[in-house]
Image: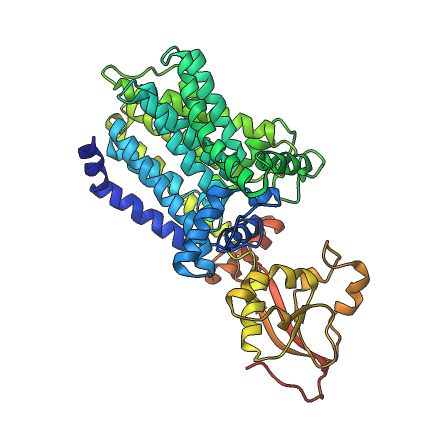
Length: 525
């Protein structure tokens, strides 16, 4: 077995897939977004403090995310790159495991194609380049699936494989709870599949309970509450209700096109750029699989047939579970990353079982090339710097010598981590209207209307006055390369909303001196 693994890892196809993955990471790099990653980062810092750490919020119980971040900070210091590296490592480890496992069951060509297609999905790359629970969950779910597949095939150490499957699912659960979808699939396959004895499900449960029990023991020793995770999870789940109600055939605040709750998840994965043509290809394979119009060719490996059946059904179950369980949660493509991985593996095995690579090699490579090319194009539509204002504020404050910089409360709060990494003392940035003569960092979109941190009563004092001196203007890049922007702006046949998305700057900032133009003021150095 080690020889097979070694040959796969040392192959040219493996090296090429890893190189493409690294290029995808560099092109699609996002960094810290001051969103859910704030919880993972703050939890990581708490893990590094002396004494016991007890999470106090739903977002801080993601131990398979926050603990690796803590290790990374311990190794590389408290900096942004250290917070992101664990997600990138999870991403590369998932791809490596996928290549090796698929190549052992099928062949290296389809393993290469599967890895390259999945590695370049825009939503996968952007999730892998920020502190993400999605990629941590996916890695441990993939470990669980391959352990289960090993047991399903009746190979050696079946009990150990089932135990490992349960333990890996529990670690994935520590990243995010949607891995329950995989748990439902595994339970159904054992109880209904007649390949593994029904009582063997006890070993899966034992593996999961071992991991969850160890966590409960820690919480008992630390604070006397073994059910702390459960209570925080239930509290968070009960308060999660951010999917806006909108009219049919309209776009909601997340950018999702909405028609009806039953079809909205399908529209999300088919109509938006996050998965390119991926789900179109997956559903085509799934249709052929379910219709049974193309049975496996004579001589197809039983392992390959088992793999495409298990992986495709696992993808279906997880997809449906997410669509139903998160019906109150905002429609986000990252919730469908794990089903996409299962569909990728299942489709690769299906292609191998039907010898598509041998019978239609040119069409297979053309289809894969089109999917990857559209994926790369879709990366351009992703906003890879959603915290442009906060990054620029930290850089400007660091260059402004010892002068205090004023900004709106929202920007000040969400710039906290960037200020820390830029070695700017927090008192140097104030989220309040500027005093006379002060530097004022203005994000126009955040002083146009109130938000949860900026009350409406403060808005008049935050507006720029005509007599103030403009120190600097900063605009983010457009989605398209600058040479293409003029052509797109003048293309009348492109809808206005799409032209704006492609050609308009992503974010703008104005730095002013809050005094009359003739007043004597200092300048940032």
